[in-house]
Amino acid sequence: QKEVEQNSGPLSVPEGAIASLNCTYSDRGSQSFFWYRQYSGKSPELIMSIYSNGDKEDGRFTAQLNKASQYVSLLIRDSQPSDSATYLCAVNSGGYQKVTFGTGTKLQVIP
Amino acid sequence: DAGVIQSPRHEVTEMGQEVTLRCKPISGHNSLFWYRQTMMRGLELLIYFNNNVPIDDSGMPEDRFSAKMPNASFSTLKIQPSEPRDSAVYFCASSLQGIDYEQYFGPGTRLTVT
Image (cartoon, rainbow over all chains, first blue to last red; front, side, top):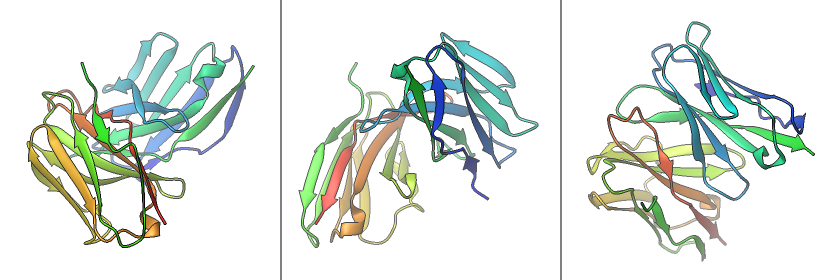
């Protein structure tokens, strides 16, 4: 079983819709959870961090964490074509600063 | 403030040659990570340092790969000899211990070994 799992997609949503990206993880002791956005040919960019159960909102982005279900998600409201990218879920698996990345979900926002 | 700096941005070399990738972390950050990204395997952690000390190098594929961090502002990843299967994008990232593991990535080095 992979430590961090994501659906590779592509996930296609129309412009203006809500995009929902999901991630599951295997280590129940994980404490910190991240969403990175990676445009084609670019480096991963940190967009959200979440550390406690519940929702965390930042602009059009909402991260949701459910530790009991070992599930973290990212909602993007009012999706824009510029949101088209690969979204990587990352989880702190214990030990210093190390995090484990999922393989990413490719999001396509259709104008 | 400057972000993570990597050089070179692109490297094309022939099989068997030595390749050295360089990274300057964000000033004040005390953890540094080297990743490799390919379409097939995604983003893989190769090695990471904390306060210039290698903590986990279990991701280094084989003895041809080595990494050093002689001081807080510089790290190298060396491949000797290089092979075509080493072709990938290599990222360096840094973080500040105590800030909940947030990592910030450099622009990457695209390595092509022919």
